[in-house]
Image (cartoon, rainbow, N blue to C red):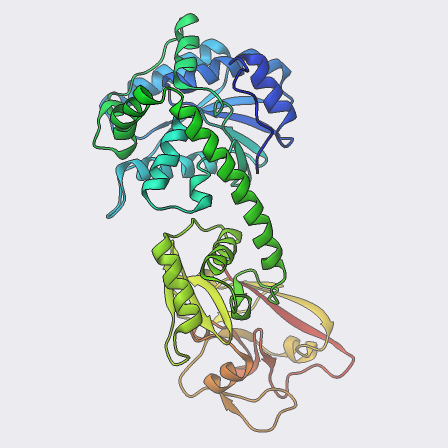
Length: 449
């Protein structure tokens, strides 16, 4: 998603910011600035405060204290005071941003910050960050050094859908020098985070060592690199649109399933784009190129006798009967004790929730009303007889017949009436408990979590 570009000659001003916010973006119900207290977000705060009365929705700011510096509480107080002086409500959040094993401190702080902010924002909010043109150039170089494809080289879009609203970067057309000049001209007060000068972080190394060297030979290097990112963004958007159409043609009605026939006959890059689109539809962060290729390879070439399980974020992609399935990393654990059905729904904990409704077919209402309805799960030796069929079957055979994946079988709810199996949710009603032809009975819907 991209807005129209402003020319590089546009002056950094409240007027240009207001035009972008009110003409180039979706209609929102709330504007919120991610305010670190640094020079970039301080400039953006002042410009937003100038146009606050002309915005079609309320404005606020949010500051996240990562607790990683001895002065972080002082910084939080500074941000609260600056916002108060400008009449902008400010929410201060404190988080634990310590990295987990294998995670960089920068990634841990970023991920924790965005999660904390997302949890506080109302729906249809626009979160505004102060990323600028030099940040964009650094991002493209980092992505290039990681061997990223066209989507990675698109770097940061000016705005995109995010959580239950949008994320926008109104300073992306302006350089660090322009922002600093405005802050100094107006005598603004900001925080200098000493960690920004440490060169062990990749971005800081690029900022302090690589970019000055490039600019000594090519003074307009940041603008040129950022312009290349914009071109890649246009190309990436075109590819995404093509893949979205392709994904929409798949046969599955369940977005967490992807038919394997959608991948057959595609070139490696095309299959990778389709897999990325499918994962993006399900809200997952994009895996590395290596992990994506492993997913593609196993999906298309692993033998049918092998259980496929490729981790993507906190999910696992599995394969079953001609489809890729996106599943939880750990299968849900069914309740230990039998649950007694009461009312029109039943909470199964990590296994989800059951709801009932009346429609032709289903479970006989008289049988339901006369007996005690309970919810159990697969037990050794359990046998069931689907209504209208001859002979009983083991649960395993029934699950295979109806295409229940192995990882869902332990958590599939079974309704019993007075201790006798009456229905396997999502599969069948059992013999002796089916409503008569043309008569409405209870149907059970199962929503997993």
